[in-house]
Image (cartoon, rainbow, N blue to C red; front, side, top):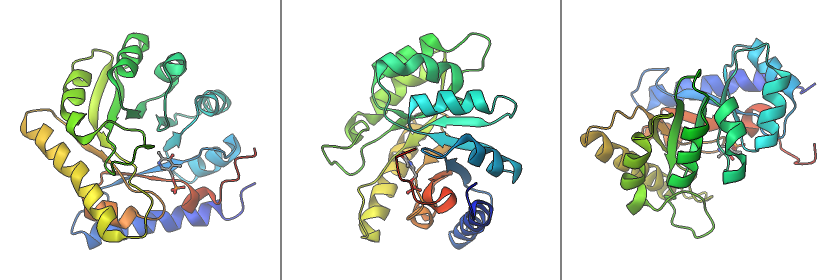
Length: 231
Ligand SMILES: *Cc1c(COP(=O)(O)O)cnc(C)c1O
């Protein structure tokens, strides 16, 4: 039992609506993705009962276990972590969304492995907006060509772009990283790609991301609490 989970969920919902208003956007302009990584299926069930529908997972094994344990609920599963090519099949079968496409090979495997009786898998191309070497995501200069190639794959539906900015307290730096993602999205839209998603913003910086145009924020610790990585 995760004490305080539901009050925190309600608080984050209020924060998100307030951030949208502050940015001059409709209250529901950004969707809340509840990032449940490292937390048990019972916590996801509790949040579901409070009306949360979209959940994010970083690890393939956790996606597999929780989607099995919660097969009675129509959870919308988002895979948001690094994806190795030998693990794509489970994700292609279980997830509704993948946010972390950063190379064509992974996208091609997901497309080929997406079961024919399911709708195309919704995907975002992840862009390394900070330029840090260690970060996943394609380089900003490669985002457009990767997005075009992904958009052409029959088992996938390209929805937009995702980023994880460099961890910093410097809000001007964060804002400019979020703005870069938005500009890349705008460029692709101008080319005719129908992209409706900017996946950016987490517990600490969702307001900044919403101000820069986020349509989906990925919030973990502010909802589920501190992660210990030991469960
Ligand atoms: C863990 C994680 C989040 C959530 O981060 P919090 O700071 O706990 O809100 C969001 N996006 C990705 C890709 C993550 O791995």
